[in-house]
Length: 278
Image: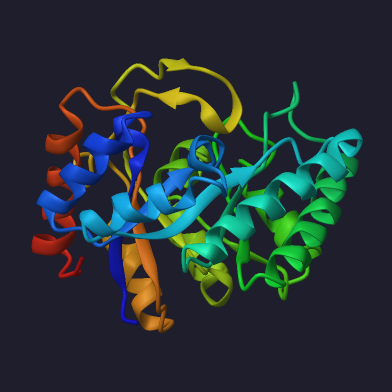
């Protein structure tokens, strides 16, 4: 499969019905969801979920999971939770699990906490591969893996067989604002270990208001693609040069437009300016 563009349902909140209708209208074929779809549909009602996607010519490509992976007291719980997501992905023909690292400890994570996280992710990744699902750590503002040094430590310590990388262009740039090339530097350093990607842009002129905490926080200074300072073209050129073969997923947790208008703007930028395909 060549590089293709999918979209995360986050922009619609929990309105899955409107989300899939809009994505079909906009021409998308790939769709990522939060773990709530597993809670809402489970395995008993999975056929309803599959029928909904089929009706709108969509396929599930990934789920967003993870948790407070640096907390050793939650190790068994979080392994079980993420393995359940992998089973749901397998049943729907999808093979990517995004591991959100969980809420950022006050003052940032200690080395011990990061090593605990690596141990937990290795176990999750080993178990999800049994279902044909690749687990991918997802650096994210306000989580335990945000800074470049934290990314480097984690990528050095996780087993590359079990844990790949899902970078997010805007989280890399905003989370490392003192490093204005953070996104392209990270893509370049780990190009061969990137197995899934989130795309969004960041406008530092907008007040950095947020609601929520950790990986579920809504950050209001993230914007539609092409409207901020992120070097999207540079990041994608690195992937192309590395022979990346998979999905790039538009993900925007907040917009001042309608969800349809916001995703259309980002889609048009990727297709018309960067030559990508849905």
